[in-house]
Image 1 (cartoon, helix red, strand yellow):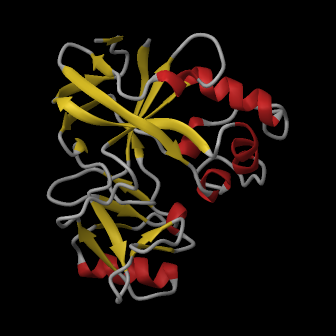
Image 2: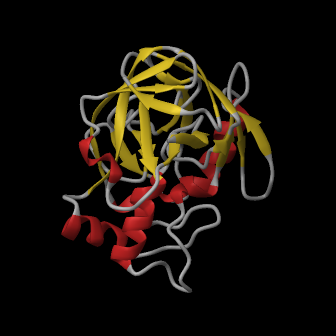
Length: 234
């Protein structure tokens, strides 16, 4: 088993970036979902509605890239603004057709369930088989699940089903404790970046896997991970 791809999302529910290396601490990948779009009543932009989050159509059309002291937001017209730039707030608000600001995380993390999310190539293959593939026969793009780590695992089936409670070492230093499966929502069927809209993936997971796909983990030992790092169970 090894790390195939590392992704981070500097602004929650915007498009993110593939990175070759990431520092991992107690909170998760450095800079991941550290910022969010906030509307005037304090709810944060998301692809779904919850007590803390509000669905804001259009967020998937915006891309965030990591930078210091604040990530950089790119609009579809290629204008770029720092997340702490009031002019950028106005531009994002105009695009979303609502007044918003971009806000750094406070005491409560912006993560939906946990610090680090993982999916596997084996589970993607299995879900592709169950859903009969995307139109044209293409495999399901891992981007749909917005996971931090894509792990190369041989075989098929839902490989993560027996991972809960186990300790996973990645590379020479990082140790994760897998907590439980990730419950999915309609976001996995939405169009984003290079992938189009679907209407079957959530239904397939509901029918075959209790609406879960992938797992989330906490960080027991921090460090740096690199694409290609081998992984082993402790």
